Length: 357
Ligand code: IPM
Ligand code: MN
Image (cartoon, rainbow, N blue to C red):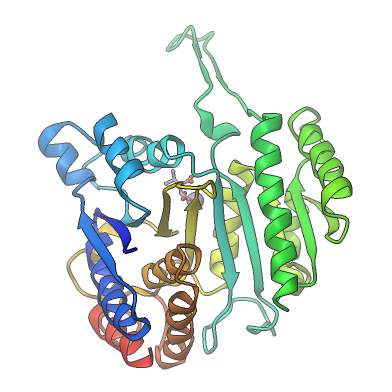
């Protein structure tokens, strides 16, 4: 059966990086001999400015019912107020398609400059599993007496037993299978802030220990406060194997993770709905980089990395691994991973990956 991929190039440099990923997809599909289809959707800032609509219920239903997976370029348009597209498109898709896992590997590839002193690819290699549908991202909260001197604004951190447990179970399974494949030490670190967030963190901590003790005794449980984790990311990244973390803290620590793996030019992630028939969405973690739009200087490796993850998790593991290996052969050839400093254009980097397949 063909892999049906919805393509959302999005805004800014999104279309340029998606073009390179599709180039790689075409070649790897031939080499690995699997059928796929793509259909492109123009959701994003330009369409919003022209029509006033971002994405509607029918679009969501179409994505849910007719596509196995989504490849997303980038979201964010300089003429649209911050928050509108992020909430209206990216978060909308994550929530509506119940992509409750945000998987963000932090891997330093060969030849990539790492800002950490004396750290190399063997030191920076772990996975962050960010819960993706709850927490401060639910939009729970509101204003009271808005605009007055007595204004109150609240934003609530939501943790449900159901949402926390399904994320933790995914993380335990992930950590266990990594070890079985010889890739991790079977260490799962929960990152939260139990010393202050005594309600939400308490729920996470209890479910972590209960679930781990009952169903995953082979996985070693570990806990870090989020502030301390930031410190260890910089000092001892080699300590980590798999991290599980609520949405907001996960957002923050994965930017730190991205920079220690070489920056936004390379960091990719998956918004995953692991349930049977779920539609997942893969993206580069970076934004739409409007100032580089159309210049052919943006690094497409993050988007190509997102494609690798899409294939690895979408039933084409060997094709995905092949793309990832081609990225590893490409990184040492680039002068830098930063936009405009690669020593190659966007499409030349795409070509390098294709040659390395
Ligand atoms: C990310 C981004 C998004 C998030 C924004 C754009 C809504 O920062 O994917 O990490 O906060 O999740
Ligand atoms: Mn972020």
